[in-house]
Image 1 (cartoon, rainbow, N blue to C red):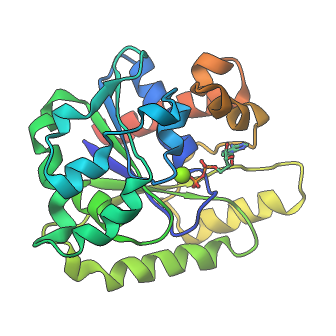
Image 2 (cartoon, rainbow, N blue to C red; image 1 turned 180 degrees about the horizontal axis):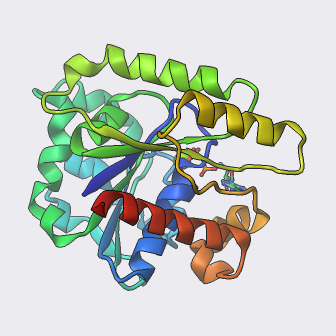
Length: 254
Ligand SMILES: Nc1ncnc2c1ncn2[C@@H]1O[C@H](COP(=O)(O)OP(=O)(O)O)[C@@H](O)[C@H]1O
Ligand SMILES: [Mg+2]
């Protein structure tokens, strides 16, 4: 199954979730491919790839028609492969626009490898760029990470409106919302529980039961090029991502 992690906003935990959920799946003996669609290449760095090793990135697949097999790298974590992102993705976004069927380039490129993996997780950049559109067009489902702040519900509404406006770009059945994921949940602040309840009320049934707490270890791990399970498997962050993995598998196999 191909799943994308999207939100117009940056800094909501898309990358942290993609990388650590991928690691949680790999821990459960599933075969996983992460595709880094962000020019910032945060998920590639989090999986231990040095800046000099980012290219060839997925950009060469999207713009030069290079085969995905050519750019898959082994992360060193059993069962977890990666297609890196790099700065050339910024140009790719513009270059793809000139191509025919610009929204489905990634979908077609992934076709030869999709059977090889239980999950292909697509980490997308902020905004609703052509890269995100490609991610959504390639996916059967998507996860929307949301930080429970004052304007969280408004931001989710804006995202859904933006997505609606773009439906014409999606040729097939659009990706379904697998769930809203509450991330960086900070129970020390008074308002948090109230905001979490509000999001659950407004989007009842559409919010993952598991929430990701704010956990400094989750923020530190990427600097060491490690997933949370390698960096601190006993942290609350690691526990939360294990739980999320189990919840997702449960949901999808029901
Ligand atoms: N649960 C968390 N607790 C603490 N820090 C987090 C958590 N999730 C993400 N972060 C940190 O917040 C920042 C933004 O997260 P990131 O996953 O990169 O968001 P996005 O991909 O949506 O831009 C990063 O520095 C990341 O390490
Ligand atoms: Mg990111």
